[in-house]
Figure 1 (cartoon, rainbow, N blue to C red):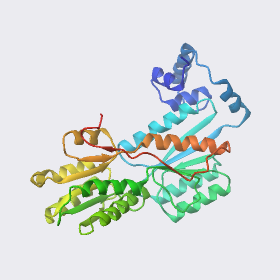
Figure 2 (cartoon, rainbow, N blue to C red):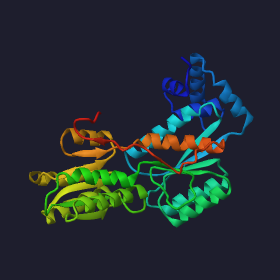
Figure 3 (cartoon, rainbow, N blue to C red):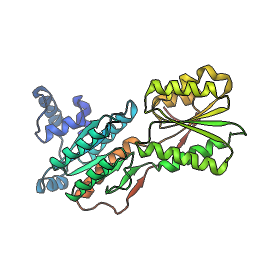
Figure 4 (cartoon, rainbow, N blue to C red):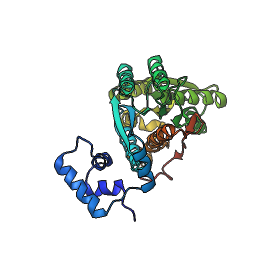
Length: 340
């Protein structure tokens, strides 16, 4: 079996990125770590792919930047997994990938990172960004300089980005509404808890949910509240809404803090309030298995980030497919089909 960067990283006890820096003799690697990685490379008899190496030697190094918000918990972990997989897939092509993280509600910081990418003349940008005209403007400037921009997970609509990679958020919201509607009876209400309108992936789920519910259960009432992914705010709002409105029988969570939702609903266990969530971190898997969440709609976060970087490589090779949307699957999970 041919040795890979991933195998070297695992045996050396370092990240894929560190192995990549050692292989390409780049800076920011401690000498003892460099020696350890080089020893493992020799031990495993690592040989780069010849065809890929020829391409790498015939062209300058490709510098890609992945810009993401500092969303807590599993999201960044999955994005990093995707970056590692992309680095492994492109290990022989002289590709260097950087990850820049901005504060999730600080659009100015995101814009500054896009300006930095422009100033440094990177070869491509993968962006999970807020929908803001300043972001759209910077994407336009990057594209004018022939720097491709690909959005993933959360789109920046009406921009000059090449392609969006992620779930069809509107459809995911409609799927959630369709499933909850099967339980709903007259006079029952839904509480929708979402992060904010800044990110299209969150807002479009809510939009799709409300649209479909109005189609199939037009008499039912929805209340949508923004909590900006703040755990305490999420807990306080759910507690207040459920306590003050005895008709709330369903909670649709478009928010990272499902634990705050479950905690807030605990005192109202006798009302048997049903909960729909998104994504499949271990926390939600456990809550599904214990019956505290009824179902969740998955998306492959790691794949979205990985595919974004791979498509940047295709763009720099003038081989990017013409499609402007690449939707990933949105599987439905409950206690019976979820796996830890």
